[in-house]
Structure formats: C-alpha cells, structure tokens
Image (tube, rainbow, N blue to C red; front, side, top):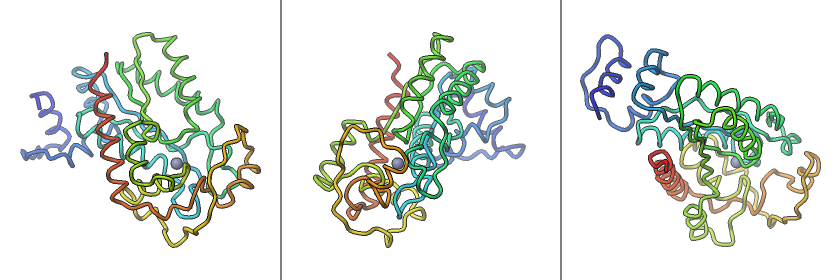
Length: 270
Ligand SMILES: [Zn+2]
C-alpha cells in the first residue's frame, strides 16, 4: 500500500481516522465506488485509471434460485477482484437483456438496444472522468451482444478507452472445474454450476426443497426462442438437468477461480 492509498482509507473512515490494519474484508467495502465521494474518486483517478463494472440480470432462475442470481454473482466476483487489486468497483447494473425469460414472474428485462444505450452512457461517463481501463464482469450471457456493440461504439468515439469482458462460465479453467465436479450432470441456465455458485455466495437466495428431479438435457436447435416457446421448452426455467449436485464447496471453488482469473485481467493490460 502506498501513502496515497493510506490517506484515502483514513479519509474514508471520517474524522476519527482509525489507524488500524486493513484486512481484505475492509477493502471489499472500501473499493465500492458507491461509498466514495466525488473528491475521493478524484484522488483515486490521480493514481489509477482502472475500474470494475459488474453487470447481470434480474430474471427467472428456475423455481429454486432468486431472480438476482446473475447480478449477485457478477457483483461478488467484482467485489473480490476489487479487494485484491485495490481497483474501484462501480455499482452493478442489475438489469440485463432477458426477454426470452419474460414468461416467468419476476423477470425484469431491458430491450437489447436499451441495455446497449445504458452501457454506452455508463462507459462514456467513466471516460469523461478519466477512467481508461474497464473490466466488465458480466454475469449473464444474454448481455453479451449489447455489451460488444456498446464497446465498439464507445471505443470508436474514444480510442484511448480500453474495455475487457470477463464471463466466468466461458473461461476454460472454470469449464474444467465444472467438468471434473459434474461430468455429464452439468447443465446451463440455473443448473448445477450456477446453483452451486449461489449456494456459496447467497445461500438465502436458494430454495433446495423446490428442486425437482427430472431428465431434461439441453437440446441445442439453434433456434431463437420467443418467451412463450422458451417456457414451453423449459417449463420450470432450468436449462438442463435438475441441479441436485450443486454444493457450496463447488461454488466456492468457482468463485475463487473466477476471482483469480479476473485479477489477472485487471493487472495485465498488454
Ligand atoms: Zn444466470
């Protein structure tokens, strides 16, 4: 920790300025952009131009997971990366492109163009203040096209802005962990790996008693599903087998591996 960072912590603690050692857990909170004043963020920008932006969705995740799963997972991964790297974490974008899930209660979706516009506005605001390197921690696959399009548009406008996306379930190292733990029992949306992740980070958002055994492998047809067709295909909202093998220990492993990969992305800009 350098002197400027130390000063920032004392300021964050107010007039009393407690002189105590800073464990990781304190940085977990300290690195939240939402808890900083504009003056503190200005001081941060004098020494660093990196920021983490978690994005996710509020959408059905089967009968057993809270609808915030995607943004809660992204928020937690980003918070842990921020704590380890001392990089600021912007508030999560809790809404994403979830239109195919709209037949299920509680799904709150942005249209793809709305999400793209929101991301452009957030990225432009970050750039205006001096942020130049953004790691978007995305928790929801449906956001990817809007994110790619927003990044292309904003980078055309501001060539000095660098943007990376981290999507935990697409990482080969994570896929290997899931393969080893679940083999043929893995599914996709709301299935074993996502349920395990939620058991590790937000057990109060998991209702295991609502998981019903069934044999429903994902059938890839290449078709874009309308909300009604999606519901007909996946009646309880889980894509794949029932998540009967999702334990918190696997979720913790997925979290740790995700954070380690994210730290590398934040620290290494070629
Ligand atoms: Zn999800």
